[in-house]
Image (cartoon, rainbow over all chains, first blue to last red; front, side, top):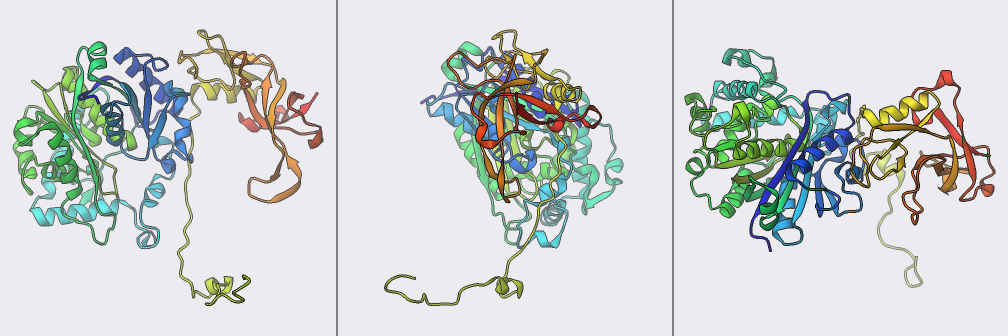
Length: 383
Length: 175
C-alpha cells in the first residue's frame, strides 16, 4: 500500500479550436513528451502503467484503446482505456498506485473535437434509443430543461447564470492556453442567441482540441522526482439516474455523493473555508452555480449571489475557474477533467503566471461528462 | 426437437410478425462522419504515395527505419523526422485468403490481405519476425501460389489518378 499519491509531471498540447497540422496521435505525443520531461521520467523505463480516457464514437474508432500505446511510449506495457472523463482516469491511476501495484503511472486525455463532423449526432446517441431518441431533439435540450428547473427551485436568475460566462471568459484573458477569452458585458451574454431556453448560446462552451498527460507517483518516488509534488488528497465519483423521466432535475445528487467521497478522504469538513480555489464544471454557465451548491461550497440557491458579489472572482474569497473554465478555455471532451486538474496543478505549484491565485494551498476539481449524463467526478488536490 | 419432445410448446416468431408490427422494435442508424487530420508523419506518407514513393522514417536513436512513418519511435520514444524513401519491393511477412468480403458476401476467388516487409525497412530485432512494412493486398497471383517469403512489388495507380491515399497502390504482385 502507498499512503500518498502525487502528481509529479504535467504536459499539454493544442488547446485551440482546430489543430489541422497534427494528428490526434501527434497531439497526444507532444503532451506526453512535456509531461515526462516535467516529471523527469523515461516512459519506456520508469512508467509502469498507463491509463487513457476516450469514447469510441467520439474517436470514430471501435476499441480505441488499441490506438493509444505508441504515442505514449506505452507499447508492450500495461495500458487500459476508460470511457470516462479525465478525472475518472486520474482516479484509476490513483488506485493503481494507492493499492501498491505501481509506483509511477501516466494518465492521458485528449480532444480532437474538430475532426468530428457530426458531433450533435454523436451526442444524440447518448440518448435512450427507444424512449428519447425518436423525439429527434438536439441534446442541448437536456441542459435547457435542467437549467429551467434549477432556476425554478432555487430562485437563481438568468442574469446570475450569465455572469458566470462573463467572469470565466474574462479570466481566460490571462490564461495563454485559453481559446475563447473575451471581455463581455452581462448584456452581451444575455443578448446572444437562445440555444435551449432559458439557456443561451453564449452560456455554452465551445469545443477545443488538445491533449493533457499527467504523471502520478507514490510518495517515495514523488520525493525523488518532484520539487513541488501536488498531492491527491481525495478523489470520488458517482453516477445518478440515467433516466430523463425520473432523474432529479433541479439538483445533482450524484455530485454531492462524489464530493462527499472526495472530502471524506481529504478530511474536508467545511469546503468554503478550507478550499482555496475551485476548477469546476461550466460546460453551461448555470452548471457552475449548480456545482458550487452540490459541492457544498454554499447552500442551494446561494451560488448566484456569491457570483454577483464577486466572491468567486480571481481576487475573491474563493476563486472559481481562474483558468477560464470550459467557457473560456474550450470544452475538451474527455480531456476536460484533466484540463481542470492541469490548472489546479499549476496553481498549487505557483506556476500559473498571470492568472496565479495568491496562497493557493488546496484546490477543488470537478468534472461532468456533458448532456445527457448524470456523472460527477471530484478531486481535492494540495501542495 | 428431441427424442422425448416432438413439439415445443408456444408459437414461433416469423419475419411477418415483425413486418405486421406484432413484435415491437425501434430502428435507428448512426450518422457519424469524421475527417481525421493526417498530421506530420502519416501526412508525409500519403503525400509520398501520391508521388509514387513509399516513405519511411529513420530513428536516430535505435536506427530502425519504420514504415509507415510517424513522429515518435514506438520502441525507444525518441522523436523521428528523418524521412527516407524505401523500395516498393519486398517480401510477404504474412497473408490470409479471405472468402468473405468487407460487407459480408461470400466469394469464390479470395481477397489476399498481406503485410509486406519492404526492402529498406528494418526488422524489429534479429529475433523478431515482425518487420516494418505495409499492410496491403496481393493481386495478379494464384492464391494457392502465395507463400510467406514470396517476393512482391507494388502495382501503382496511374499518376493522374493518385490522390494521396493508401489505395494509390492497387495491390502488390509477385516478381
